[in-house]
Amino acid sequence: MTVDDWLAAFAAELRRRRVDPAALVAEAATHLRDSGRAPLQVFGPPAAYAVTLVDSLRGATAELRRAPSGEPRLEATKIIKRYGRSTVLHGVDLRVHAGETVAIIGANGSGKSTLLRICAGLISPDSGHVRIRGTLGYCPQDGGTADFLTADEHFVLVGAGRGSSRTEARAQGRTAAAALDWPRPGTSGVARQLSGGTRQKLNLVLAGLGDPDVLLLDEPYQGFDNGSYLDFWQQVWRWRDAGKAVVVVTHRLGELDRADAVLDLTPGSPR
Ligand SMILES: Nc1ncnc2c1ncn2[C@@H]1O[C@H](COP(=O)(O)OP(=O)(O)OP(=O)(O)O)[C@@H](O)[C@H]1O
Image 1 (tube, rainbow, N blue to C red):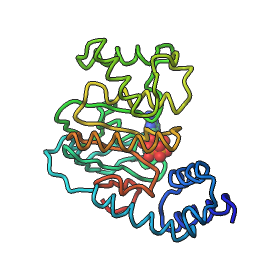
Image 2: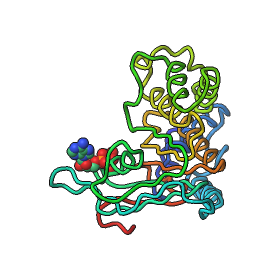
Image 3: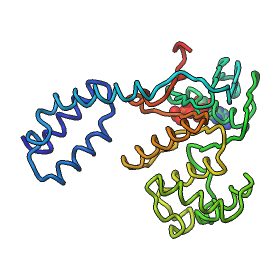
């Protein structure tokens, strides 16, 4: 069995078990390349390895998932939003506690970004209200950076708005960037020269500057490679364990176990 055949069978079994294969296949491929040995010798039959891995991952994520115990940090109540004649949000409730991660899912156009923008105070609902207790960081789906500023200049600018000195903001930004596998943001040039994934890392770092209590992340990992994607979830768990309330809009349904609760905005889905 060739490495490619083994990886394809491994990915197929993961998909059958409703687990996104991308990160696990990449990890197995790297391991096989490094070992230089036949996949059957290293991992055994692909389906059996997939089953073992899925079982252990499910056990691990079940332990990671927990009921909220902190105070509510974000409460959005009976949110209704219309654009023209079309009602996008029909009385949505969202409550996120300190130390909790909530994933927002839903079909394209179901209003995920709209709800996050309402929670961030960027647009107003037609009715309903939002209450945030503490400070807020928001990572938009795209945009959010200034083309002609460097990463350091972004850190200083956004840090200043959150009460950090230049030195503090730069140090915090660089440390957060390194945790997302972006080791030297200070030498990366202006934002418009960054790759899409790196620009999104900049957005995510900016959202976390100044240590906000509530983080609203709108598909923040678009363009991330697999390693950075895993780093992203490590960062989310660090935030959660530090008592932050974290909201992540996501399309990766195979990975909902990573969140403590899920809000599905697909019309007709139970809330
Ligand atoms: N400023 C606007 N004016 C008019 N319609 C809008 C506006 N912003 C969003 N919409 C519409 O509202 C609906 C919800 O959009 P939104 O971007 O919130 O959905 P989404 O669930 O985030 O979608 P996706 O999964 O594609 O990112 C869409 O039909 C969109 O076209």
